[in-house]
Image 1 (cartoon, rainbow, N blue to C red):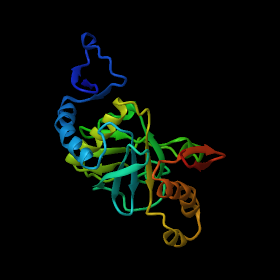
Image 2 (tube, rainbow, N blue to C red; image 1 turned 120 degrees about the vertical axis):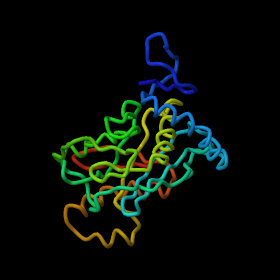
Image 3 (cartoon, rainbow, N blue to C red; image 1 turned 90 degrees about the vertical axis):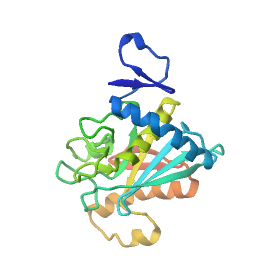
Image 4 (cartoon, one colour; image 1 turned 90 degrees about the horizontal axis):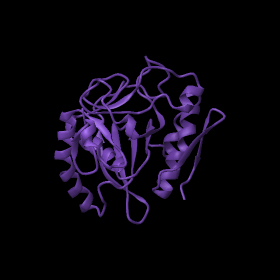
Length: 239
């Protein structure tokens, strides 16, 4: 394994102590992927007036198989960098409640300690499922990842090249000081019309807990603050 700092890949041995604020450990293959991806991404950022390493926000929309990457602009609002195609899903919308129910929905956060393959693929991000909300409802099971590879199941999959880019985007934000990257997973675009179609029942009740976060970001283009209180999500707009 190697530790990648803000500007270079270094050995994880004690003699290679670095002064970077954050170290993200990946395989040597992953380190090479980050190095070759960084320059390409820097150009994409620059074209939009953005800076690689600025804070990011991930929004995944299951029904559209779409992972959106938003980056904080100099004005303070977030601009969409690009969309990535999710190439694997279990086909059923609704929150993951146990090992057999597929991929999660809800509000998660990515920190440096989650930027590890966890034995699946050569690049991956642990989504930290179950979160506090999930555990409060008794939902349990094995970890869920965003990973390289298109196998279905509890993980969200991207092509190898797309995962290299997403991993590098997250890595760059973390090593430049973003302590936690919001990773919000919605079942569908939560427009007023779409919400009228969901009916009643446990899934509908859960989705209505997610809707305020969708509306807050659409209104402000800034990731909202999320807390869990009384087994419910509580959403407030960022200031």
